[in-house]
Image (cartoon, rainbow over all chains, first blue to last red; front, side, top):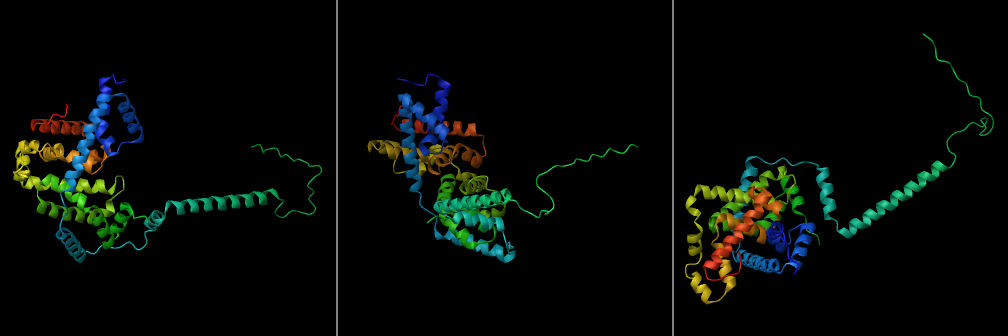
Length: 160
Length: 186
């Protein structure tokens, strides 16, 4: 048996078991717990106890029922009363909110297609720009030869 | 079809959208109610409190910064309201032994043991825990809150969350053992 010999480490892992059972650990911690469970039968037995507790806690909560319609009526009556006293000023145009709402309304597939289309558009545009820069462009003087000899004039700086 | 996220709903609520408020309420009111009713142990009080919780959501939606999940934020508000209500009426909070007995007076631990129903006994002992221990067990197991989220809702450091959960489970095991079922831990 490949049990965890270091007691503090085992204690640390054991403390994480409830969250592992509930599936709310980070990937890294979940891997650590899984590894420990695979090599420690006593820890695995305790994990079974945690799973029992989890199942019964869910069962218990599910039997608690739900609030009556009175709670919702009371809430919206309070909201109406509050709005009547001091109406909330609506923001006329919340651009950030609208963009965020629009994006969150798209499905992952739609978002993938949109992103791909955007990348293709950028690539096409980049290709056009590069081609235009590569070709001779702009006005040029007919008398100015592109080849031949050049003279370099240098001016001495003034002395004060 | 993809449903609108809680964060988007909060944005709409901040702009005074009543329909968004209805959607958010429909989505979360049962869980918030169950969290509160487990703390205050009284359905009528819990109903009043959830109205107050969602009214706070309506009022404070504009200030929600999205640093935590909306459900975490709402449970933190609910917890604050429940504890305030308990402070106003201290007789509502009972010690764990009497609370356990009042939950179901017709079914004492011995009778449940005769049924040899470990699940029933475990549930009964869950109701017999102190408010502090019930709360953390519910948040972790039923409300599926991470260590960080529990720390935020309860207002304690993350290491204390782990320690408190450990002692809540230990207390639960003791109650179950006292009722005649030895689970072999701790």
